[in-house]
Amino acid sequence: MKTTDSNVDSSPLGLIGVGLLGSVMAGRLLAGGFSVLGYDLDAARLAGLRRLGGEPAADAGTVFRRCTRVILSLPSHVEVDALLREHGPALRAGSVIIDTTTGDPETAETMAAAFALRDVAYLDATVSGSSAQVRDGRAVMMVGGEAAAFAACNDVFARLGCETFHTGGPGSGARMKLATNIVLGLNRAALAEGLAFAAAVGADPAQALAVMRAGPAYSRIMDAKGSKMLAGEFTPEARLSQHLKDVRLILQEGTRAGLPMPLSTVHRDLLESAEAAGLGALDNSAIIQVLQAPQPQSPRS
Image 1 (spheres, rainbow, N blue to C red):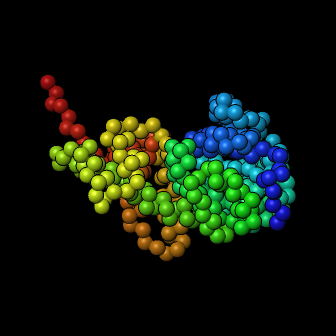
Image 2 (cartoon, rainbow, N blue to C red):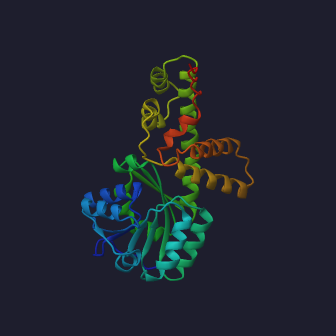
Image 3 (cartoon, helix red, strand yellow):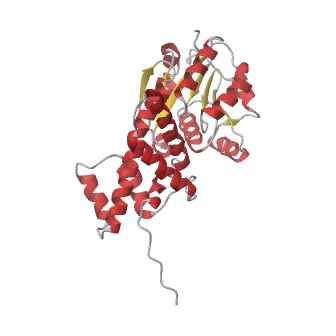
């Protein structure tokens, strides 16, 4: 396919979805000298994009018509599919879709094949890292799709993450993201259970976290989520409900592959309990709340 030479292309970067992750990506891109034309259904998010220095679009179609490279940051592949069915025809030949949504790998393969017929590249460009890690330039990009399209977007990936991997053909970025999310999510759940256990048996949870970070139990998730769990402060950097969506996708892919996934099954059940308790919109570290020992009730007088 013909790909856009980013050194001569004067069109802005498109961005559909200016939520928790999308707004942080917009900020990094704008700070790196890119111009960004963005759209979101939420007017307040568009106002936030304007404050960052980006240009709000009147609708998604405007973004697709004006931009040769369009980043998608949406809740799931369901929203991506609906968006591209409605507005994808506005994309010009030689354009590239950079889909950062964590979605179904088979859907990514189908989309890539369909757009390739029109000389439009589709990259499943998944992100490993919370919004805070993206903001600080510490995220990792895992990108599936055509090698030429990947190379044409290296400048974007270099700005969004600290390291980028071309994982192979369409769908491979989504599959790699799900693999990494298994370990990431289970590390987070194990940390939550360990801190809850320390508190329940009378050990100091803060000291337990310090001991874990000093010894072989250490994982980076302790740096990102340990203090949030201890403080019970769950302002979202990555929402619990979004990780539940990912775990459901993980189990779906595991079923397709005939793989038993007992740990992810338990993890899904824990996340569903948390969502049922009203924790879905909080940071995913809030999983600790369904692992803590119930507090004894004071006797009624």
